[in-house]
Amino acid sequence: MASRFEERLAQGPVVVGDGGMGSLITSAVGRLRCPEEANVRAPEAVVSLHVGFINAGADLIETNTFGANRPKLAALYLEEEFERINSQGVRLAREAREVAGRTDVFIGGSIGPIGELEDVTGRVRAGHFAEQARILEGRGADLFLVETFFDLDELVTAIEAVKKVSSLPVVAMLSFDEDASTAAGVSAREAADRLSGLGVVAIGANHGAGLLAGLRALEAMGKDGLPLAVMPNIGLASLAGGRVVYPHATPEYFAEFAAHARDLGARLIGGCCGTTPAEIGAIAAALKEERQVRSPLVFSRPELAQAPAGDEAETELARALREGEWVVSVQIDPPLGGRNDGMLDTARQLKESGALGFLDINDNPMARARMSALMAAVAIEAAVGIETIPHQTPRDTTVMGLESVLLGAHAAGVRNVLAVTGDPPAVGDYPGSHGVYEVDSIGLVQMISRLNRGEDYNGKAIDAPTSFFTGVAVNPSADDLDLELDRFRRKIDAGARFAMTQIMFDLSYLERFLERLGGSSPIPLLVGLWPLRSHQLALRLHNEVPGIVVPDPVQRALEEAGPRAPEVGLALTRELLEGSRELAAGIYVVSSFRQPLAVLDLLAG
Image 1 (cartoon, helix red, strand yellow):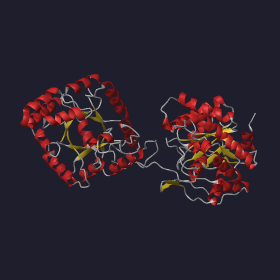
Image 2 (spheres, helix red, strand yellow):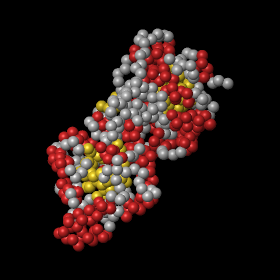
Image 3 (cartoon, one colour):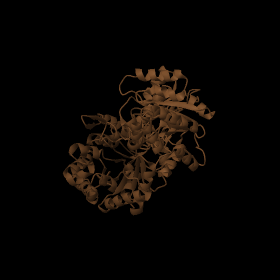
Image 4 (cartoon, helix red, strand yellow):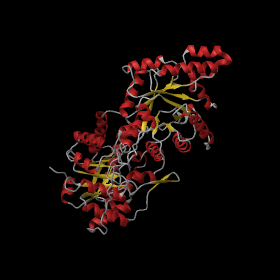
């Protein structure tokens, strides 16, 4: 037997939803850890907002429980209030319905995603969704709105979990961008096809990039299937003085939106973040008046740009490694300040020596702020004409920021990139600071591989594919060799094309590592060498720099050499260089502090 809500969807009139409950609660009640905390700290404010939406014309109000799943509340130290917050959410909505004198108003139990707060299996996630659904139904919700999901798989998990413990109707909504795609690159049409077989009563779009984005998602889903729902943000928010500020959309704009949404098949129309009773009133009036659209909808269709001819030209490093040439690179650090004259002069002299073919550039080594390695690479390649291998770490910026700087470097001609984890900020000049690390070095390689396929990290098309030649770091002298081998294989699977080892002072570590790989590396290796000039430096590297091992014989040799330590260090490194020829595709040499041209003594010998 169909529920009252299902009958309304089928027979009409269109259901008017409420607006941005969470954003309005946060504005109205100070010092909340989350909007849902208002259910127990400021219940009168919650009731007042519900009544405001009902009086504006809403036929459905959502419980203030969107983020009230156990993992999200636990992260805010509210886990003990889990049941009370959810129970109160329904009770306050019911109270508002009584206060407004609208007993026909539907109460939708709002359930949002768990997201990345908990790295658990789907079964455990399902348990959290089911737990919340039981409470909401038990306190008197009429239906569920499983909403604002960015991940289609998580939405499916939530729907299936809710339906196992309840027979109430379920409306399922994802968040879409202006191209009608989720953050993970799933199109609205694909989402509709998958959701249509899960027994939900309506599907649609909420939150997202604004009204037009919601309409575009509706158009893509099509009105030949399930009833549609749309409850978009008022628009893109901004920050001003520490406050979230939404655009000043006019009621007329929302009235026109409602007319378009109805014509596209929407049977539930409301709002999300930033929408107030004024906008909901405009939607209700437009639907009641059977407003006709005044301006046709015209959606531009994104077209995948084709890479310019010749843009995938092989880098000189890729060619040399492919043809089996012995590769020599010198590693330099970018300047600590805003001038690059000295760096360019050093790069020019190293190139003119003829002893090397490449320069690899550290990315804020030892977590001390320097010029960006990618920017340094752009300057060197433009001014000096030698190919570079800039290091890039995910430590200092978000996924979006990483993509941004990589695309900029690619446009400037840089093609080789070494993906590294990077030293934690706390070990350098920023004690107490934390790295960003939205991805690790493996995730960074995956990101670059996707850019090379013509898509961003979330799978959305970019203007044209990139042609990066991606390398990774590997440490044959790692304490946990099994872990290092596993990560190395995962980096290769992610798209790594070459590797550069940690600094080596004993090739037996590399030999052991290669044996574990079956005798040779699946991708070309460059061995890291550092001609030590003192016993003190050897001690510091061995004892203070993670991952570097300076064997006792090397330390003793440098100690016994006394003032001849630079000469002995050079001789030991020459032995390593010759031994590397049998094990690797080339070397990179770390230049001495304040004496970068000293590496030529090794390379010329």
